[in-house]
Amino acid sequence: MAERSLEEMMKIWSTDDPKRLVGPGHPVGDFLRAPEWEVLDTGTDPLRLRLGLPEHVKNPRGELFGGFTATYIDFVSLHLFHRSEPAGKPPVWLSTANLHVEYFAPIRGPEFLVDAEVLQRRGRRAFIEMRFRSLDGELCALGQTTLIQHRTG
Image 1: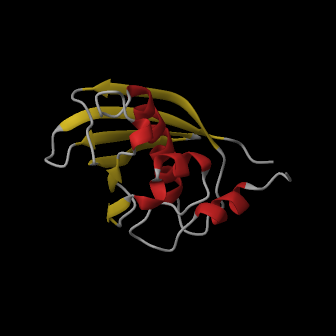
Image 2: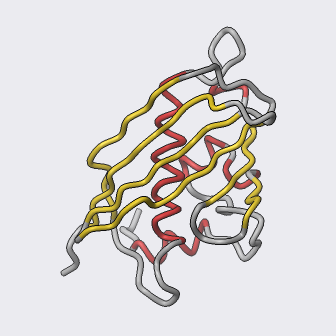
């Protein structure tokens, strides 16, 4: 398989639908069923989402398996960063330098809510926070990531 640029890959899974974060084609996004998620607030930051809870990410009690919480945090953080960039700016490669999760209550389906916000940018780093809530508003988990932009060239 030929190596693709970040711009080429982002075009594959992009969508013109303002109510969707991504389209199909991203391996992790497809695993999490991200093309089905609903963007509740079409502004860029904070990002508000309604997500489904697929069977394959549940523990035996029918709740989100804890390790997959980090997968949601990482995936949404990367996409939030790109959404919050100025229009026309070429995308940059990002790495997750730090990821932290605090659990308060089980995340149960069939759906749950996520609020994600870029709290600070400094140099090549961005600090993002996410809140996982039940549909009735209970705070279930809090996630934080530090992303680092790779230098170009």
